[in-house]
Amino acid sequence: MQPTANLRRRSFVTVSPQSHFPLENLPYGVCRRREGKICIAVALGDYIVDVTALETLGMLDIPSAIGRRFFQGETLNDFMAQGQTVRRDMRAHLQQLLDADEPALRDNAELLAQVLVPMNDVEMLLPADIGDYTDFYSSREHATNVGTMFRGADKALQPNWLHLPVAYHGRASSIIGSGTGVRRPLGQSNPDNGATPIYGPSRSLDFELEMAAFVGTGNALGQPIPIAKAEEHLFGMALLNDWSARDIQAWEYVPLGPFLGKNFATSISPWVVTMEALESFRVAAPPQDPLPLPYLNAPNRTTYDIQLEVYVQGVNMNAPARVCASNFRYLYWALAQQVAHHAANGCNLRPGDLLASGTISGPTPESYGSMLELSWRGSRPVKVGDETRTFLLDGDRVTMTAWCQGDGYRVGFGSVEATILPALLED
Ligand code: CA
Image 1 (cartoon, rainbow, N blue to C red):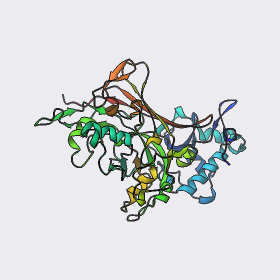
Image 2: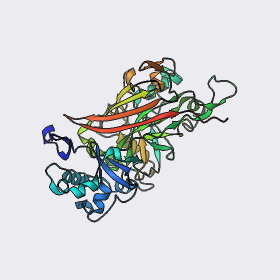
Image 3: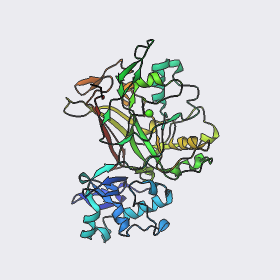
Image 4: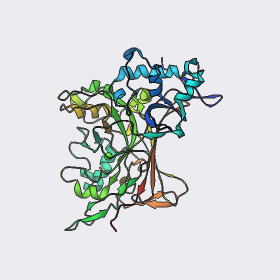
């Protein structure tokens, strides 16, 4: 039987005396508390619950991992490595501990003061030590738009695109948390396709609306992951902004692909929503034609209904203006196919690795997930509040949000945001 809205579990933590925060989401993050201590936490409405402290106090024993600890470090990697069973047990345990009818924590004021902290009182850190970062290119709409701009409509999709989830290896060292400013990169470009390129600040700085999945349990080197088992290797998801300097990218990408046009910064949201919290929002994935090869083909392919928005606020604007509304479900290649393809040659994925989806563009112009597409390579200025943009200006703040809409509640991803800082120029 499917749980209905009125049977959803509610927490003793309240918005108002009558309104309890639901226990559906419980995303994991890493934060620095006021006194400087770093802890792993779950988010509950406007609060964080310090699970490191709960574990230290011996309150997190679960059947699949009695006596074992995985929240004592400063990243989620240890917990990510535990896999699906431990994660599910921990979810059930935390839902029980935080339930409105459960007195153990609710009625222990001294304990509560130690573990329940207003979110505004903590600083969010990167959730994981990300060893490797891969960026896919899984939106057919995005790949078609970009291909049309650069090669023309008849050659928009490359011959491989419908047969495999195209990707490249990104750079993990420049993955930054929400709120960290992004410096306009310097680089080489050839804007007029002339005999010699130029070097200077990028003139076409862009965002890419993406989501990213964190790897939970990995695979041994040389050992592929079958598609039927692929989702078991995922821990959870976050929002990702794959900053892109289009002029640098356009000049450098032949023949090996993205490099300095991409690796100056990648922003991720601080809270990781687990795959279990997304389960109620599973939907059919877009049909695939032609059918992919058997190692990528799963019957009843599914994805998730996750609503996405991008806002831009310039320095002279009073409020952020929405520039894009899209949905994760538009993606042609599903998460399981990305994982199975990534490991098909025996490449080993490790706990904490990050797999980005690629820009998530939808079928309509307002659902395009980058300024490149929204402004059609700079040819159609985009209305942003009372202003217009082709690409991003210094001082622009870009905010991405995501949520799953349930019956009377949401499973939210929070946001990822950053402000563009001017290029560092020599005097
Ligand atoms: Ca990308």
